[in-house]
Image (cartoon, rainbow, N blue to C red; front, side, top):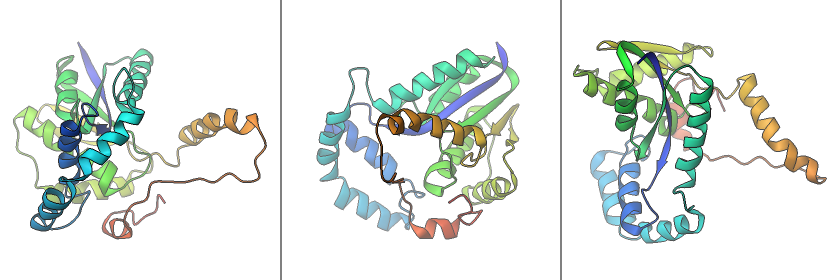
Length: 239
């Protein structure tokens, strides 16, 4: 048993590239109010009546083209990172996916089973930037599930959201946390500007850049709606 444990958390993946599993995954993903930030009735109508009838078949085909024998590439690669972290850190490390399996709850349960009562759970979201559709929804989901597992009542979603946005804006690269029952949850802040992260990105690019000469190198990122930036702190400072 140990006093500390790390939950390595990522987006998630369907259980398989089958249409039914992709449908279940898309349903959970798209019904998250921090993904489609619209009133529930409108979100339900868009997802259930317009997206889910057709999108799963298209997405399942796309997943089938990238699926590995070991499983979802995202899950397999994240688990490899987990194993390397566990080998280097003096604590257990488990996986928790915001959508799909292994879920955040399953990851917390596996972690707590290896920890002494009153220990510290460290949450490491695999998102370098803060966005309501990535880092925020993952951190708040972890809070909700940990409160349930500890059998204590948590704050409302709005209050928890306000707390998270406030502490992240003041974190300055330092982990922050709170007590949940007899467990302390410590959350690693966004790390987009951490020298170690930047150095790792640069190192991962060097072999490809050294292989041949390029006139230009184009960086492309997954975008988010501009309104999400206006809703969250620190007002797009990480972009």
